[in-house]
Figure 1 (cartoon, one colour):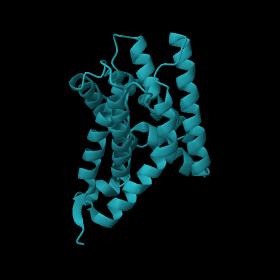
Figure 2 (cartoon, one colour):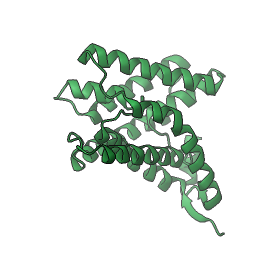
Figure 3 (spheres, one colour):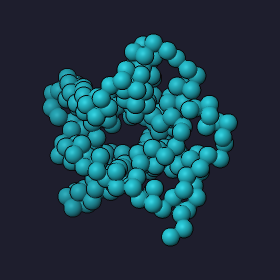
Figure 4 (cartoon, helix red, strand yellow):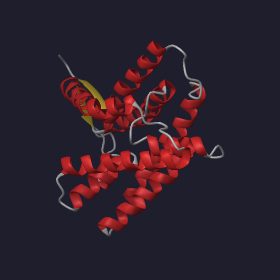
Length: 223
């Protein structure tokens, strides 16, 4: 079967635009968001004057600053992670408004379906972003960059990072609400299954899509 040609720049746009909608599906399901999304969600639920997307800008800016402190260097290309955060956060707020994410369906079957669609769509988005050279949101960039610079075992470091984000979500949830908010069975399912679903999409992309750089000079700058 002949492969479809797709530019890595288009892959970035598809991934960065689809991920906020994927997150909105899980938020609307109200069965638990991913541990990465949870901190911004919890804070925005407590502070009505700031949206979840705006909270993402702040948290991801902190991650970029922390990255520079840890690896003791800064490159202008790192700012692309914040550009990605701005795109993600803006689209997230739009997606939540369009999908009326604050209204939870009364039918449990519908909520489960929303969660499953959100999980699959999130994995699709991440797998698509894996195929581009443009810097994704600060969360993934932080893990990959610190891991490479410090020669860490990426698997162990990613597990530690995910565990830290879960711990932060739990602390914020109980500190701000005195109960679990944004953390539920869906959070566990996504933590367990997303890696396998991402791998499935990555394998599918490699077999069906030929990725190429439309802007070679830009690609070399980020490499």
